[in-house]
Structures are given as C-alpha cells and as structure tokens.
Image (cartoon, rainbow, N blue to C red):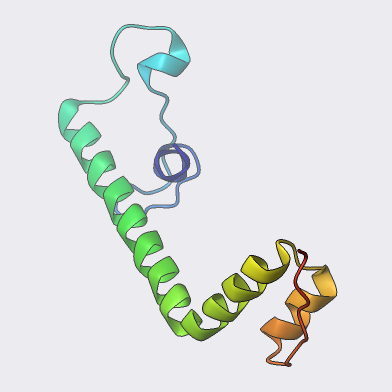
Length: 101
C-alpha cells in the first residue's frame, strides 16, 4: 500500500510524474479513474520501488551481518537489551551480557 501511495498519491515516480490518482476502493465508484494501460504502468513503478527497497534492506543486512549475529546472540542470552547496550554494540564496543536465567 505504501509503495502504491508513493506512486499514485505522492508523485514519487519519475515515470508517472506529478499526478495524483485514487482507485475505486477509495472513491466508492465502479472502476478506476485511469486506464488499464496506466494501471499497468503504476504496477510497474510499484514493483520497481519494492525491488529497490528489498535490495537496499538486503544490502544493509549483509553489510552488518556480524553485528546482527552479535545482537542476536546477546538477545538469546539476555532476552532484552537496554538502549545503551544496543548503542554500544552498534558503535562496535564490547559489552558484557549476563544471562537473564
């Protein structure tokens, strides 16, 4: 929904441009206010946004994989981390995590 709104409501697609559209579910009317061809173009732009977001999030996780493992190991031992503990781990500082058991 967010990616579709980015394209149809907030003009965040270079291919579609600064246009705002509402679909039938929002207007209560039968059918959309745009053609099937334009609907396909909107779908293509939405897919493009989703693929880019997926790639960006995957890259961030891969770049921080070691940190992700350290945090998950700490969470297994302690169940929760305080904000300061998380920030220290994120800053690369070693912290002592005592088991919550």
